Length: 207
View 1 (cartoon, helix red, strand yellow):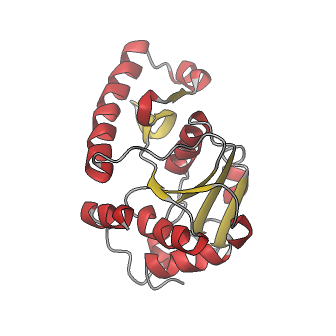
View 2 (spheres, rainbow, N blue to C red):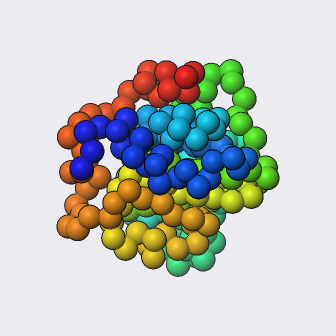
């Protein structure tokens, strides 16, 4: 379906032209979402930033997100899920401390000394290279809301057919190039799905 993330980003940008002229910030999810977001930002003449988030996984089931953290101390916790999963405050604190350390390492690596672009009152376009479980994308949308975005658009080149129902409430608008079936993994829809490096992320952000 896509030659690589660059082509996917250009095709995705074509589906987002209705946003042109609005107060946009395009936010790529590292690492693979950033080269896609780079093409979207260029096509929409919008600023590009990285949205660094870490999912807080239930200790016994790490894929199950009980919350998320972002920059500037942003923290979103699903208290009902924490209660149902029997996670103690100590366990939650331990998961958060571990993920906060990794988040801060990534922020230093990707952004360096550059300040985070402000989102208050703006349309945040959250971009990844595809949706599988959607847990990280949901966390990113939660975090940009906490940063004051007026509207959240979640945009990906490819996602499962039922992704909008699955992601309900995460964003105000959902945009994808295609929703093919059967869907096993994001990488099956790319000729080149090689891992994006930290250096490639930094190069995109420096433009």
